[in-house]
Structures are given as structure tokens and as C-alpha cells.
Image 1 (cartoon, rainbow, N blue to C red):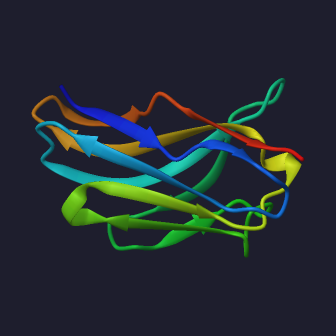
Image 2 (cartoon, rainbow, N blue to C red):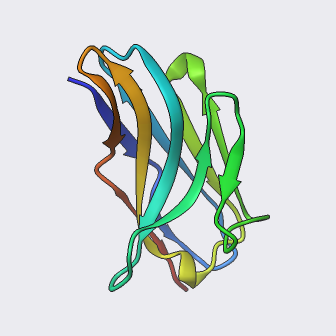
Amino acid sequence: QVQLVESGGGLVQPGGTLRLSCAASGNIFEIYAMGWYRQAPGKQRELVAAITGGANTNYADSVKGRFTISRDNAKNTVYLQMNSLEPEDTAVYYCYANLRTIQGKFNLWGQGTQVTVSS
């Protein structure tokens, strides 16, 4: 069973920091891109940040300079360091991985982790 398990969400005050982690497990042949989306109440899911196998990164304009995505290929894990958090960052954050297993190449999603920024 291939799965993504997220951790690190929670409640934080404006200006605070959080670090999200997402670990892929199972019989995985290769992981290509990994990243994070988020969905706030009443809004569409949006890309937050992505990182390729070669460590090229892409960020939403709203998080540039505040969030940093990284990955540990040996651990099949992607991280999202979130600094200077704002109330507008409040959302459910979903991890994804584009990967290849014996079933072929496909996108896998995590279960989501809540991030709430509030005083």
C-alpha cells in the first residue's frame, strides 16, 4: 500500500512558523515531483510549492520569501517550512507526489493537515 502521511499542522499566531512534513511509504520505484497544495474554506485548491527530483522549486506568489520547500530523497519525504505566517495562510494543506510503482506512474495525495493562523 503506497501512501503519503503528513504531519506538522496546527494553530499558530500571525508571524509564527510551522514546518510540515510528508513521508511517502510503500513499494515505490521512483518519486518525481513532490509538493503542497492548500484549500481554504470556500476557495479552490491552489498550489503552494513544488519541488522536482532535481530540486528545482516553484512557489505561489503569495508565499514567495516566506515558505521554503525541500525534500530528503533518502527518506522519500518533502518538507514545507512556513515563516511569517498570515491569517490568509489558514487552510488544509495537502501533500502530493508524482511517483512510479508497479501499477505505473500517477499522482498520490495525502490526507491533509489543518493549518490555522490566528491570534
